[in-house]
Length: 219
Ligand code: G6P
Ligand code: MG
Image 1 (cartoon, protein in one colour):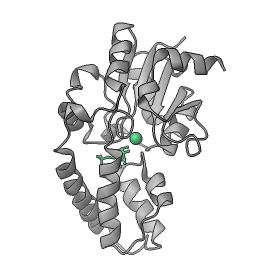
Image 2 (cartoon, protein in one colour):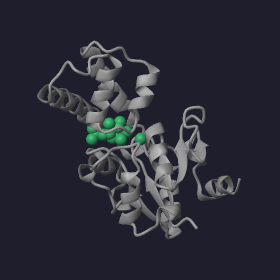
Image 3 (tube, protein in one colour):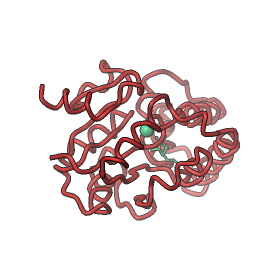
Image 4 (tube, helix red, strand yellow):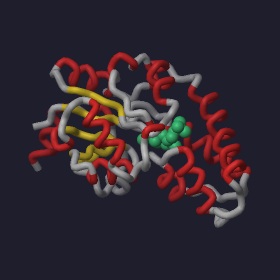
């Protein structure tokens, strides 16, 4: 039986995935790396440094910069990103997600956050959702980023549940792979043609309800 839900944040609860993309796009352009849909999709869910590495690889310049230069570029992206998220308000919560969080809370389900982002607490503050997420995996504690299951296993441990008792919500291909490898039920948010490995996919967050999830699990 499902007793808890593990949430990704960016692209699941709010559309910060577009700010990450915007900030990475700007850096890629500065580095002379061509931006395309494949790169944009592949970046979703990856840690900050893994994202930079993928961009460099995409441009065939993975050996061009030393660690110090890479740190500088990652910081430059993050400064730009932090500026973009300042504008977030509770109105930016995806349709139906606040209702889903309340449904879970009222139903006694446990919740935790499995976001790779070091900016997650700031975003939750802006969205006024801090009280819903008392349990947050610290991304600095991870040995491996998504698609590794580590973050999702830790997120279940934080709420004292077995992975089998948890749903995992994700918008990223890398995230769905991590949830599946952790043996949680994967709920994709986005395009079913992209999130092909998910146990179920919702293209509109308005439809994310316990009833709809349970119906899909029976299929
Ligand atoms: C999330 C996002 C990624 C982002 C990562 C690290 O997983 O989906 O796009 O790269 O967090 O975020 P940060 O805010 O720490 O750079
Ligand atoms: Mg995401």
